[in-house]
Amino acid sequence: MRILGIDPGIGICGFGLIDFTSGASMKALDFGAVTTKVDAPLPSRLLELYDSLSQVFSETKPEVVAVEKLFFAKNITTGIAVAEARGVVLLVAEQNKVPVYEYTPNEIKKTLTGYGTASKSQMQEMVKMELSLEKKPKPDDAADALAAAITCGFLYRNGKNDEYKFSNTKGDKIKL
Amino acid sequence: MRILGIDPGIGICGFGLIDFTSGASMKALDFGAVTTKVDAPLPSRLLELYDSLSQVFSETKPEVVAVEKLFFAKNITTGIAVAEARGVVLLVAEQNKVPVYEYTPNEIKKTLTGYGTASKSQMQEMVKMELSLEKKPKPDDAADALAAAITCGFLYRNGKNDEYKFSNTKGDKIKL
Image 1 (cartoon, rainbow over the protein chains, first blue to last red):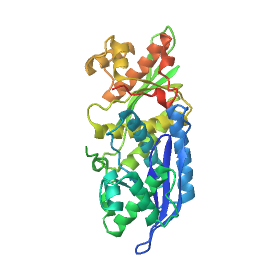
Image 2 (tube, each protein chain N blue to C red; image 1 turned 90 degrees about the vertical axis):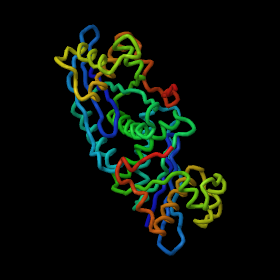
Image 3 (tube, helix red, strand yellow; image 1 turned 45 degrees about the vertical axis):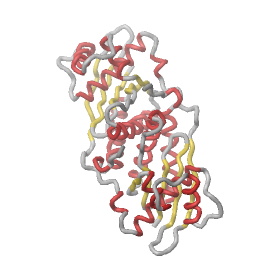
């Protein structure tokens, strides 16, 4: 199964495609990030993101998409722009008829490392090991996207992934 | 000039098209709301919104779009969904090559009524008067969209509207 992890963002949006087969180790097929012009108006950046992501979908042909749930603890201004970008990510997934699963940052950390407070560096080390990469994937946004995709694979393996599918908007609760 | 006001939302998204000519009174050409299925998953609702809004743009042929700026004071869960919907609104505007102007709720209230703490009912009364409507426009989301469009017209008249154009993402600041 081809799982595409996406780390939504307006300036840089990471993606990572893995191949997941039950019982075998996971493989990274492709990863990277799409970027938008920092000086462009927001609507124009959202269109850039839309066009680039549409291309990623048509090139990577994912069967499942994995994204991180949003939290707005740190910076609400940045948070709003990320949510606007995430709206475009979900739209493109739906236009490509690919089901979306979502996980909180803690669920991703816990699934990969066993505990929910792992550091960014520890997470990247686990992504590298799990996918048998020679070095930590770059940029960070691609590593985050791969972490979401690996989480999706682990949860499939445990038969628990269905709990994380978007069922309806009410199910898309943000716990604060 | 045809100004399309939009009140972004995931379940219901209001729109209102007005005709604005300098020196003449403004006219409502069309208003209403597009809705999405309440039980559908979020990605599917965003696609519904995208398709419906694309149709509104092709039918109303706006030259300018006016939207409200986002604030997340009340409910952050709803706020995130609204921001995701707003991302789709801005995307559709950009795909249709229509420039977007945005105003805080207070700027809209102040422009229409003279003070920033006007009630919903007072605002709807002003929309009705300004557009010479026989009764208050319904639903509320359409009235809010018309209020944004009228604000845009007033600010054009005063030569101040350029300050409210999306220049770049940094300019899209949310004051809290």
